[in-house]
Amino acid sequence: MEIFKWKEQVEKERREKDEFFIVDPNSPIPLENRFKFEGLNYYSLNQSYRFELGLHEHNEKKTLNVEDTRGEIRKFVRWGEFRFKIDDKECAIQAYKVDADNQRLFVPFRDKTSGKETYGAGRYLDLLPEGDVNRNEKWALDFNRAYNPFCAYNEDYVCPLVPPENWLDVEIQAGEKNSS
Image (cartoon, one colour):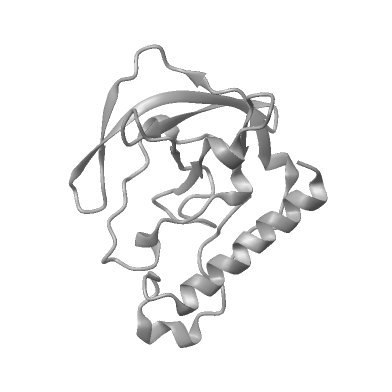
C-alpha cells in the first residue's frame, strides 16, 4: 500500500474509533465519563513499525490456555509465527485463532513500553485475510494499528492476557498509548 493511502487509512480508523468511544452504546468508556473524553492517545504514525511478512504457519496447531483478566482460562489455537526485526533485533510473535475455522488472526503482545507509555497488560492486533494479506500472500503486521483492549478503559470488560511467548524485548513505539 502506498504511504499516503496507508497514513490516510490509519488516521481514518483512529477518528472512527474516537467517535465510537464517544457516542456508541457499546463504548467501554462509562457513560458518565464520556463528556470529558477527548480522544485516544497514539504514537505518531511510523512506517518502520509496519511489516509485510509471510506467516510461518505451525504444522502442529496446539491449543494454548490463556488466562484472562478475571482469572478464567480461554483457549486459543497457536496458528503461526511472524518474524521481523526492530532496531536490528530479531523478533518473533505468535498469531492465534479462537478456532481453526475462524479467519481472524489474534496477535496480542507486550513490549518494553508496556506499563510505561502503553497499557501494562499489553496491546492487541487483529488481522483478517481480506484487507491484511496482499497479492503476494504477505500479511500486513502493522503495529501502528495496535490497540488497548477494552479492559484498559473499564474493569467490567474481560480480556485475555498476553502469553509470555509474545512478550517482546524491544520497544514498539507505535499504535495506541495510555490515555492522557
